[in-house]
Structures are given as C-alpha cells and as structure tokens.
Image 1 (cartoon, rainbow, N blue to C red):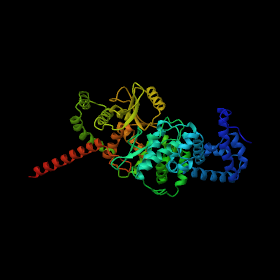
Image 2 (image 1 turned 180 degrees about the vertical axis):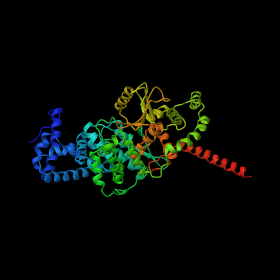
Image 3 (image 1 turned 90 degrees about the vertical axis):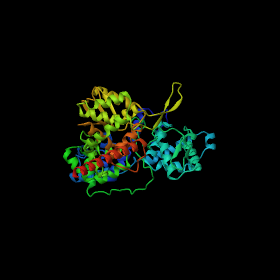
Image 4 (image 1 turned 60 degrees about the vertical axis):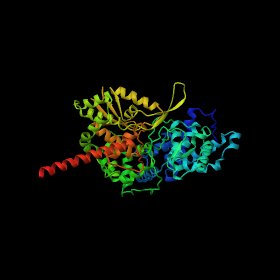
Length: 533
C-alpha cells in the first residue's frame, strides 16, 4: 500500500507511525531471517523497533521469548547477541547511505533553473562528497541539511574544518580552493561560496576567509538535528592512514563487551571485564562519537564511571606523568613565577591571599585560575556589535577561566546554569563545577560531561578526570581554554600527540619552569660540593 507522505498530509502523529513502521519492517525482516516469524506480531504490539532491539537487555529478552522452548530461546539469544555485537562495530545507522543519497537528490532538485546553469551538477561534486562521505562528521552534516535545508554555525564550522584538512593534505592551490567552494555552493545552496575559499600563507596551513570560532581545532558534530550539546572530536594535524584495529582485539572481548552493553553492576564485575576488552574499546573510542560510545558502554555514565576513564587513559598513555604526584613540586615552582609575572593590584592581592587559605581545594583552584592570566587565550569568535554588524572578537581570560571552572552557590543554581548552556548552540565540552559561595571554599566538586556529573574528592582529582575525558573520548579542548589545557597536557602530564598545536605562552612557561628546575638542581649540586670541601 502506498503512503501519502507529502508535507501537507503528514501530521506529527503520522510521521511517528511512518517512522515506526519502517523500523518495524527491519525488525520483521531480522526475525524472519533468524527463523522466529512467530515473534513478529508480539514485537509490533510491544513497539520493539530496531532501536529497542539494539539495546535489548537479558531481562527483556526473557520476557519476549518466554513462550519459546528452551532450545529456541538459546538460538534466539545467540542470533540477537551476534547481531548486537555486529551493530556495535558500525559507525553509522542502517540507512545512512540512503539518507546521504536523498540529501544529494534533494539539494540538486531544490536549485532554481538559473542555479543549475551556473553551478556544478551532482556528478561534478565528487571531491566534496568524497570528503563528507569519508567520516561521521560529514555524513551528519548531510543528514542535518537534508532535514533543515540550512547549516547552523556548528555545522558550518565543522564543514569548514573538513575542507581545510583535506585542502592541506592535498597541498592545495587556488584551483582546488575554487573547486571546493563551487561544490559547497552546489550541495548547500544557502551558503556563501566566497566564504569557503582557502589560500595558503607561507606554504603552511590554509587561511580560511570565513571566521571559524573553533579555530584552534578541528570540529566534531553529533548527529542530533538540534545541536544543543556537541562534543567536538579532534582531528590529527597530519593525515594518517592507521590500520583499522591499531590495538588488536583480546580473546573473549566479544563476550565481555556484550556483558558491559547490558550490565552496569555489580561494579567489581564491570571493572574486571572492562580491562579484558581494553584493546577492543580503544579501537572503538578512536572512531566513534561520544553518543555512540556511551550507548555501547553505559557504565561510563555511572557514579564511578571516572574509574573506567582512568583505566582507559592509562592504557592509551602508559608513560603519562601524574598530576596528583607532580602537584606539590609544581606548586612550589609556579608560585614565584606568578608573583613575578602578574603585577595587577587585584592579582597581587589574590597571590598574597594564597598563603592564608586553609582550604586546600580552594588554594589549588585559585592557582589554576591564576595560570589563565599567563596562558592567555588566542582563539577568536564571531559576535555582533551594537549595530548588529558581525565582528571578530578574541576570547578573554575570563572566558578561559569560565570554560575551565564554573561556580554555583547551590545545586539548584547548578541546574539553572546547565540549562542555560544547553540552550546555547555551541559545544559543551567537559568542565569542572564548584558548588559553594566562593572558589575558595567549595562544598562540592564535580566534573560535568554529557549530562554526567562525576563527584570528586578534591580539585586535583576533578582536573585529572576532566583532562582524561578529553583524551579518552578524543575531544577538543574548549577554544577559550585551549592554551591552558595544552600546557597542562604537555608540561604536567608530559603527553604529546598528533593533534598538538604550538602555543607560544604555554611553551614559554614550560621553558621557564624547566630553567628554574635546572637552576635549582645546580644549586643543590654546588651546595653538596661545598659541604664536601
């Protein structure tokens, strides 16, 4: 039976039914393929569609197979687990390619006759489609545009970064820049072609004419149609072609992964099985979005999920140094530098007050916040002036501090701040939340990440967890605090990656600390020599 799905005939209720029917058809096909046609009507009655089947846990599986013989229950369990495991390894949903093709067709059809004469045809968009189809970000942009017929700022920035990365990897010239800009205009008619033109400066990185508010990193877009919370993934500075499974896979990883997909307790079992599929998960983390990761490994969302992040980080960076172990010496070394470099009266007062603070967490947080005055942000973003004209503005020190630690007087205020953040069409990267009247005396410390709140025992532990989330989930640092986090990564943790970008102030501070450390060592050696003589 043909369905009338024209815009005027489809109400929200009908849309839901059409969508559900399509998903049920896939489930019905699977059940027939597995040899369980008698379950089709039950699945329809209970609205067990393809999404529900993907995350069906053992207790629900028993409910729908209770009338089957034990032998057939065993067979159904085997078919379901194998299928769930196969889906866990796929980057996209079943119909992603169809969505992409539909987007291309719709994009071309919507163009006026004049546009068709003056732009490239679908067959001539090969270069741009190749870029977009090669990664999750690009396919998500196509899906988003097929629904909204327009790109929002986050999608536009992500598209720009994908093009820029490709342009640079091909050692691009003016001809390639013109080609890509034309193809953008063809696929996304609402975009300004000239804003996507690229050029190289001193034969190094491409300079992008359009302003990119996430200029210090490459974007990562989630697949949500309304991008209220986005975790931006990092892209390497140089193009690489790693093997599909750089870490290999442990024996028995499949069974442990399936257990972790459906179970978040008892916690001792979770942690034990967690380390037994470490390599398998490391491969998955490198290639998938945060949304997909948390769906496959829901234990991350539990109160003790940060312990799993610890394990994943240690596996990924076995030679990383420890913030908690390194802090005592770092605190001694950094205080003289803060006193020497920060001369504003209010900052001088803050530094002097450090010795009087009795709350260790407040003191540690204060030192971290003072560091932002040395590790000044360099990224820019677009804003509107009083006349409504778009202007380029630089992130401030306060922006950098705010993206690192947010403060709320009580839990109600915490929720209000989180609601405000969700309403903004910009990425919500991991950050630290202090609950209390001031930064100097917090009553509760937590790390916020994708609606997860990890409660922490100290400021140092919160910073440690927050930092490790960026690296385990392969996320970008927030642009306002990019310089700060780069320093924390390279100096405190002594970790260097293919994603690193040079930051002058971070490099200068590292050199000063290393110079002071060398001077201190030489002084001690001289003292020992004097004592011997």
